[in-house]
Image (cartoon, rainbow, N blue to C red; front, side, top):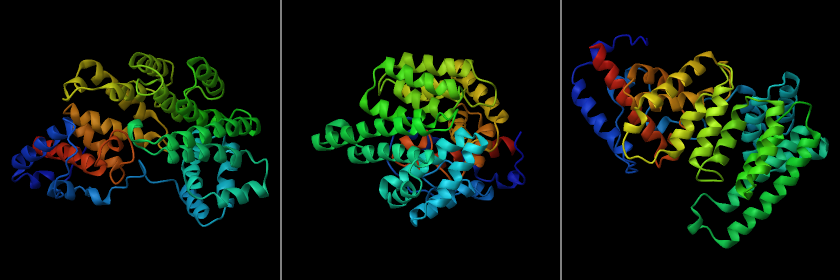
Length: 365
């Protein structure tokens, strides 16, 4: 149970606040993207919670110090902190941290790769440099395509997208050839190539075997593969749900694999109300993910992403004390599902969070 010190003193006028926030969240559940003027409620302020303008939209949580330093150095043209970081992940066999760092630094290189070129020149066969190069080419391809729907994307954009993405396939093959024993990272990165180029299912199965032979419960690999199997990309709702269910059933507690049935539900839920999120089946999925998160290594780089998803579903299920606990653990960051699918990620996060605050205060008064 979450202890909320001094909250009974804040109860004056609570039910009026609750009604206002409840109205806002119902609009959110109906998919409204309209932005409304926001004022941080006194109850949320008393807990040290932050308004939308202070929510980081680019990350789900604070970056580890070593990764943050490597990004800063790379942007300044210095590749050596990144090389040291990648060498350390090999020594520790920390494949989750390796792919997480690769994703961040590849994004930097897609904007300006001068530092990566210097790294490649100094250490031509460095597996870390090859890995970042391959993943940065994927980012570059998606940057060329743009984020708009197909009907708003030009033929020139599509041509550039497919041409550059095809190059990333060759680069991932080189990264795999250079990779240290047991490292699944080049194959994890290639999933996004598979998604964009439309690898046939048999080819995706081959890629997946390369990953699971090395790291059967790798979170980013499963998240990426689930996207491939979703209806909106290369699969269907049933294929996505089956994939997620297998991942959860075969994984040890603390691996965070139980998040994937919940993500599969989120990706395919087209209802206009929260009723579909309150069924006994979805409540059971949330309970499983809660237990998984509680057992996970606190330093797991993907744990905050699971906490964001839990906060969302717990709020929709009126399990506000548990929701608020998760909201407080990730407050200040909104770069995660479900917020990043919304037009106003920070505003939607704060509105649901504040609803849970209001309900918890009401229950304690």
